Image (cartoon, rainbow, N blue to C red; front, side, top):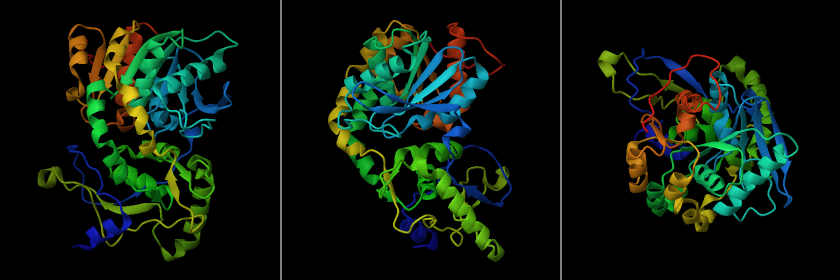
Length: 401
């Protein structure tokens, strides 16, 4: 077994994800930075919204005018999953953004985290919205959800929990495909590392595994999926503390020219004519698992144990296609592959009941992998339906309808 393989197994990190991008570059050494990034680089502020049962929901906000894009994340993610997309879409059209940490996720503190049924989660969305905007004129809402959040968005619109909803956008969730995938979901969850020594290692794993293919998005999104196993605090609360401690350590080690602990040496692709299909590799002599910068015993674990939510999975997705098609508002379905369409949606798409956009170069976290392309698709949908106006020129992709 090669030294590289031994180091990879020791560190429990999968090989670096690499799609066939077709980009050529000279063979150079470069450092990839996995330092976590705080939410305030992408959002203006946040609100902790207390609802009737005493639960306090974290909502990240951006913008003050135009229709409200209310974002609902997928299972295990957080509202920070929408960070880069929020920035991009705000540059294309006049809008305001609210990204919610759902019950049991992120920095939301709920009185009952054991109930993650579609009914409970969709009711939360309606209650948080009405609490945020109940004492003022409620804005028009475009509800946007990814994976589990897409299912929750459909349930919320179907149940008319937000009367001012004017549009619905669902990202990479289809009833038939989702129901089939549930059979292997427990195996997938068991394959994930149970803990990480620090946030850099977690972000590195996130990118290498292909969970999120965009490094910048992973740096802000991945901490929202974790908590400190010793304190129980969300990892997002410790970003500034950890990065400050690491920088101090780097400054001390600088005279010895030791590489920063949050980066690894990588090789870029060679010239396209010689190695157009090659993938980046990790130099084995430089690859190191970053040490914990704050406390040797501290580890980060998953914020929510998704394996324990299995009893709710069928309820999230059963009947989803018919509910989606039966809603009267304009609808957009964004997919990572056209093969994800089930029979009902295929028929509905041929009948023009919704618009569809396929982004085949993305993984499941479509909006994180390519936030600019997703923003262009959403902006086109908003302008086409006259929900808002464009504030700059942007590429308007063709949507099937």
